[in-house]
Length: 332
Image 1 (cartoon, rainbow, N blue to C red):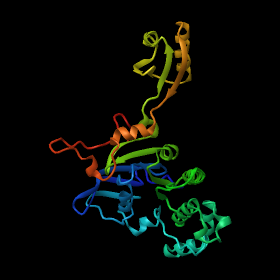
Image 2: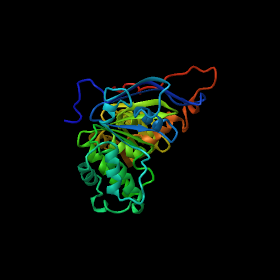
Image 3: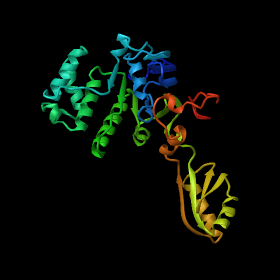
Image 4: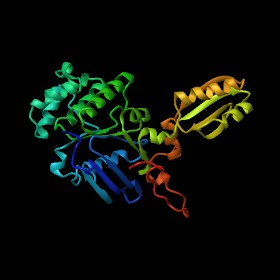
């Protein structure tokens, strides 16, 4: 069964990976990644963060300058490993051939029986349009055809590079549903994206990359941090005094006309207790809600809003370089 693997074996293992171009641009800088079998693992970062370069090294298309890579326990580009890997990137199709004939040509290149073509067309939801020329396909259909091509080998590991890039909301929804169905089959999926909502919705674990470096890694919930209880009540000073006496309160901050509370166990019962205590104190309560930080805010804090290669995050001369890694307290 897919996703089980050998105990302790990683689907993708990257250690201190480095790639430079022209001796001056560092695209990937001592990157560490660990992807377990059966995970949908997100590489989240802006354009130029090093995601595509990393994927090309995983596939053996680009040679690293330093570091160790293992894909399904084998070196990148190993023929026996590549037979178990499917990758979607900037796939080129023949525009005047049908979707079916394009996949037949791809099947011959990877020595896969034509019988797989019908199966992957159905999986990608393209059976009804399989006989139409690709030149008449929408962008969303072309993206799903690229996923179908990546599935021809029935891979254990599926690598998807920006699968929803440029798609309208309907196309994004169709792509997300396709990826979720593939994950439900037990495949390991490595998803590269700069779309934070996409990564949060689809991935069980996320590595945030900026400037070619690992900035943080964890589940989407871990990266967003502990949920806070937000309170708006008048008078604000009296409200602050009341909430300071709440059981389970770990931290409180003023944020404009609101109070931000970190509770030991934030949830509906805590929200109700906060509201009840404020009302019983005679305060006018207009809002009580729980909320985690948006992943976008976390990402911007981690990267400082910068993108590009590793040199865009390099500290000024004379400052000590600190290697990035997992956020404190996050499980491997």
